Structure formats: C-alpha cells, structure tokens
Length: 324
Image (cartoon, rainbow, N blue to C red; front, side, top):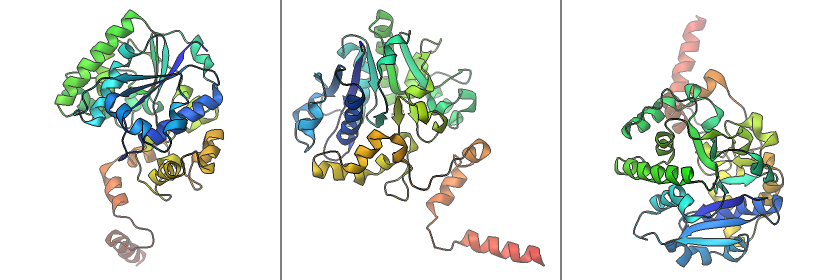
C-alpha cells in the first residue's frame, strides 16, 4: 500500500492514550504487515512517557518512523494534541491515513489507495447533519466560531482522515489550525467545530462510513468496518457502564501493568464484535433522541441497581390510584 498510516500521541502516566494507541497500532500492523506506519508526537511525550511506559519498546517498534514536534511543554496536553492534529499535514511527508488512537483496525487498509480525494472523512455519528443527535449543541459551538453549519449536509468526524500531499490540503490545514486556535480562545476545545468552519464550501469528500465505524451509532456498518472507533460512547469506566471493552480504563491499565496485550484485548483485535458488552440493546429513532436529553441524563445519574427512588414510589402511587 502506498498511503502511510499515521497516529498522533500526546500522553503521560496520568492518562491511557499510549495504551489506546498501542492497541490500535497493534491491530493496524496485524492487518497491514509491511505498511509504512508513522507516529507523530510532541517533545514532552518523546522525552518522557513514550520511552518510560512498560509498553514503550513494543509500541515504538510498530512504527517505521517517529516524528517529534517541538511544541512548548507548558501548553496543556489536550491543546498540544490538537495542535499536532490540525498541523499534521506540515509535519508528515506524503499521503497518509490518520487514525485516532481510540480505534481498532479490523482489516487490511490498502483499499484507501483507490479513493480519489484530497481530503476525506466519514460523517459524524453516521447521520446527515439534519438528523445529527447533537445538532443544536454543534450549531451553538460553531456559531461561537462565527460559522453557522445549519445548512451543511454533513458534520464530519475527524477520527479517520485521508489526507493527500497537495497544496490545497496544506492550505486547508493551515486554516484549520488558525480556526482551532481562535475557537480555543473562546473555550471551544474539540477540533471538529473548527474543521466544519474550515470546510465551509465543501472541500472535504465523504469517506464511506465503513472507514470510521462509531460503535454506538454505526452497528449496521460494523460487519464491513475497516476501522472501529469506540471512545465516541463517552460512558463511564467499569464493566457495567462500558458499551465496549476498551472504554474501561482498568482494562488498559492492566495491559500497562503486564507490559503486553492481554488475552481479552487480543480477542477484540481479532474480532471487534467481541468488544461489545455481553448484554447490549440497540436503540434508534425517537428512543435514541430521548437518551440524548438532559432529562434522561439526570435520571441515569440518579439510578442505582436495586435501589428504590422517589420517582419509582410516585409512579407506584399513580398506578395504585389509576386502578381505583
């Protein structure tokens, strides 16, 4: 395959980003032996955790090249990560497929060579923007950047990006970083609102959904997935709360302690379906939108299995009165 495979890492002992990247890059190498894999990191990470983690030797061995950007270590880690992402076109030579760390590569990726686009991405949450579950919140963030995306057909997910080495892309990424920094000053931390603003006019080509399958919303694409993107679930840690095995921080910390891929993680790499929780229910339509509301989130935050609540008592009283 001609296209490089790119990962970005800003990490330290307080997080599990290196562990996530190790899982994803291991799955990528398994399905794409001999492919050129590049790691783009920052000086603070390269001088510390990149070579101070129990997984370091096995992790760095997966890459053909490690590029270190001289970012100021005093910049918050999350911002450094976004500076690398919005600036990656300037650091990496040649065409590349960027893959977020919170993913599992499910099959060979050589078909990406045949996709004709300067820049391509899959729709966020596998929906048109008109049907996007977070439509209003997304519009509000983008408007803080001075851009109204309400008429856009798609709001693109930046977790998997096909990026050709063209002058148009260099211009696009310079504008994306400028827009991101302007948004950061206004309190907007995600990089997708600034990506949407930069894409005003429709520069980005739609990448088929199977290239970036979000586990909570993309079940219909999972069978044919190239890349499975799991952290979009934004759920808590623990076996009862995690839709996907790798959402559980303890699973990744166990791998760190053992210094190698654990059997349960190897099973997910072999078959991403095995990452889903043993008991999983699929929702769609109005039910999906209900679970996105503040009312549901409030009820969920107060729910504890086996414990009665005031709401349940009131519903019981109502049922009793209705029977009379």
